Image (cartoon, rainbow, N blue to C red; front, side, top):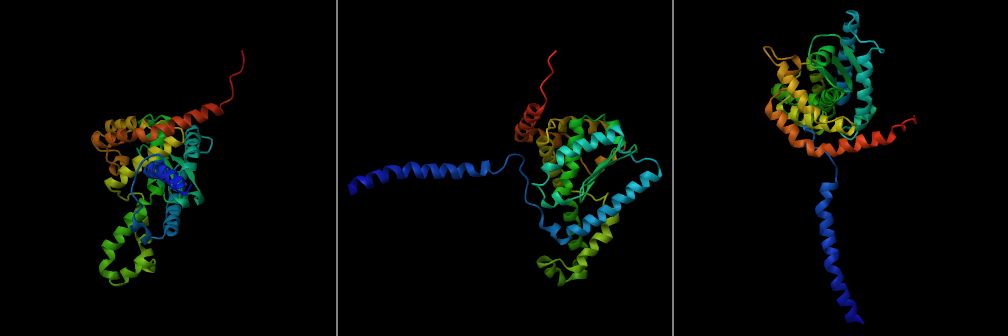
Length: 293
């Protein structure tokens, strides 16, 4: 009987081990669906998030006040304002996975009347679209979602904090000296000066090509999960390239376009199309049944 048990144990051991190895092999693939981007930069930790968000809020309010003074701020009942806010309302719930602070942000969406082809999302979830980008490019809802997702992605991935953190090290290395080392262990009080010094340039902060590529991909996933067709990213950048005649639009000044960018979006579509299809099917199942004639 003992020998029989040993034989059965040997027979069972192989399939069990094989099953465990197979599970281990597929575990990474099942970790999450969607695009793949790197870890958030540690340079962002050199600038306190709360301080940056407060600075962004103050600058955002200044923009709204200036627009209101010039009667260029879209009222709540404006059709485009309602449209932008409805799109944002669908996207925002999917931001929390990318940044835990996003669930606590006081999200706002506003429209400013201007011919600028521009839009942005400040740290803390403050979103502004200019009428120029909507009208000039004749953006569809899917394309608006791609623009919005891209800008939201910059805030979620804390690219502004990262840039400011790198600037702190570059410009402040000589001044901080040995104190810089302590900044890696706990935020040095002097590092918070970076927010005040660069806060005025928050809107014109230049992001690197890697940041832009990351924002494209994360934004595309956010839009897809919210039920917007991610293939609109291709038509969006085709429109942006067509608008880039003579002087480039302001939105392109920090958002390089081109065939390479479109190719990267197309290469990542297979990763997000299932998310879009699932969201679309879920929406269809929630729709009320057609009334009988």
